[in-house]
Length: 290
Length: 334
Ligand SMILES: Nc1ncnc2c1ncn2[C@@H]1O[C@H](COP(=O)(O)OP(=O)(O)O)[C@@H](O)[C@H]1O
Ligand SMILES: [Mg+2]
Image (tube, rainbow over all chains, first blue to last red; front, top):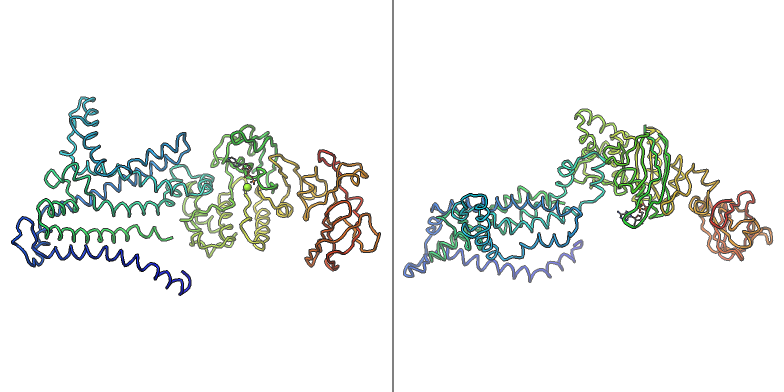
């Protein structure tokens, strides 16, 4: 886009798409904001009219909100931790020349193709069920009492399931980054006397910094809104132990039929997402500068 | 100290034999150039010495010590890669300091050595820049700086100048030669450019399809090429070759005459061979004529720059009888 003319042309060409996307976004957002200031409960249709900050006070004042906020951050942070570290490790392994590399890579990527509710069901019944899950059998084989994962460690269980789903994504992006590292740079480091661990620390990891940043940013966007896995497994419980903000909005708006409060929760969720995004861009965004 | 000995080194990639059998003896402090056409195995040979590739069979010795199975770091050699292979996320200073840091040298000593290398290579004002912000020649210097701070037993260069423009290449050629005179460390330098080989080397190894065609001083190769390949490869422009009856007059399968070993005349009949000028390349100092010699084909002839020629001019050539190279049917010099 060097000249003024090409820039004008580019703007004109992009305008329809940008305007459409903008309308697409702004209409639901404005409606949500509108509802969040209304008394609008499906159970109590007589109660209508302007609610002021009432819905917000109700949502934020509730102790479940604080817990949901903490859960959201734990969920995002936990999954990021597992996928970034695990993904780096897997990418390093998959980068080795081994027999059956092609098949192996497809196998590693496959969890990403499983729909979230299906993945959650597989984990719920196939692995984590204390009675007939694989983990239960494993525990019994060692003579231990099977763990009732969703009752005892609800949030942790959800984190494990979500991490399992996102690990392939992280692995794939990090593997591509790893493969773009010039062979000569590795060899130069080797000749410079850097041992494997130092080559990783001083050459490979800095090279992957940008890819790791992208993994963190993209995953955070999706992880803030995790819903299906919670809905299928714990239903947000016990109590609010595995309820995140997205699920809290669902509980308030749909389960409790309070559209006004649900909308207020939704607006709060949008604000939180933006706060997290700004915070993240500050923290890791500098890695994106070429 | 840095003498390097190769004993019957063989290298195959799977089924493909790249280096059949090479034995070489490189003395301490020598500047040896591996030269040969692209794909002949120069880089492979250098990487074998560096330890970046395993030999299929044979032995490599450094100062008499067998290092065939030693990893690169243990050989104490430094390599300058064609792409420079600088670490992009480190400043110039950190790039140069990296090998010292890996050797766990105290910081004060590292600083001193980096300072010294920077002064030697005129890098002082770039020390805090990233490689991205440097020109090709500056990157080249950083790569050399990273190599010299380690005080290696020998330097290995793999076509280090091929990414630079012509003027810079001549400059860096001189700088590397000066560096060698200053450090007196063994250097092995790979290039496909015979001019680099001739100007820089103490001794040249001419490689062809993984074989050593000749190993000798530049003038040796120029004056006494062991075979037709070396004769054709060393010298610029290339030697002219003649087969058939004309060669048999000299009791050879083929003969070769360098462009600079002709006497040229424009007087009719005043020469052994007659021909027509095809193209005249006038460089000022010299003129290279591409002459279609009657019955013998196209030949290159060097003459001084003061004479002008045009397409179609008739010329008469006499090769210097003492400088006709003779080759047998297998291409070996007679
Ligand atoms: N890792 C490798 N695997 C298979 N073949 C290789 C490998 N490295 C080099 N070769 C082959 O070896 C030959 C010599 O390569 P190289 O040493 O790079 O030549 P050059 O003289 O141009 O530096 C080439 O034909 C190349 O294709
Ligand atoms: Mg090469």
